[in-house]
Image: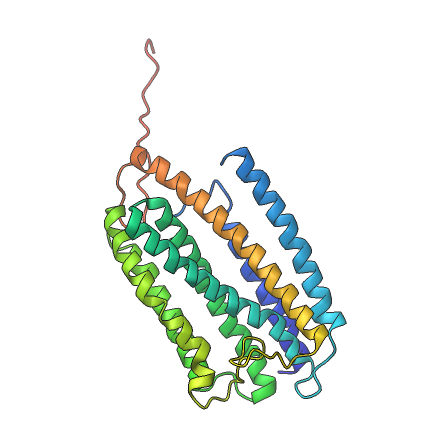
Length: 32
Length: 246
């Protein structure tokens, strides 16, 4: 894997993780 | 959620978004390419904040666990839970980003290095913490057990941080939080890193606030729903009957 591709994948992964947390913690969605 | 809390969340979200945009520009466009590692070094602007904010989340678990044991107020327990859930995700992210960096720079995705192994153990310990939380039906019992684990588990954090100092590791020693306190890092690179840390910290605050609000709501409606099985929810009983006179 090239450095450029690693950077693109890494930043996208970061974005997905934060988007996931914001989606999972929206009010109206219950969870223990 | 109260109106003040919602407006606070909106303010925090706007600040996090602004910081994230700044961190992206600084990390991907303004900061110079590393002379040795090339573009892969730009992963440090997200890898390091993920690790640091995970440490911060686990420190929050420690403080809130101690506060729960002192006060027996379940709100402290809910903060501990929210912080642990975030810390686990950020630790996994830090490991994933480290692997993406390791392949082009070290030539391997993974190696049995002290920093990597202690970080993997940290992830497993806090996953176990989240698992223990679901074992007891009584919220006070669950909170008491998890608070004890939340305090002991934090011993892993200094172990991870100082693993690169205490053992000979392939992973580089701390660049910014080194034992001598002198940061051997380019100014623009340090600014990009600081912007990443700020963006991650603001986003973490927002996520923890939203998660605690969600848990507060769940706690408030739980008695109405009845005690459900661990990890599940008992749906409210809805009776359907024909209208009188038909």
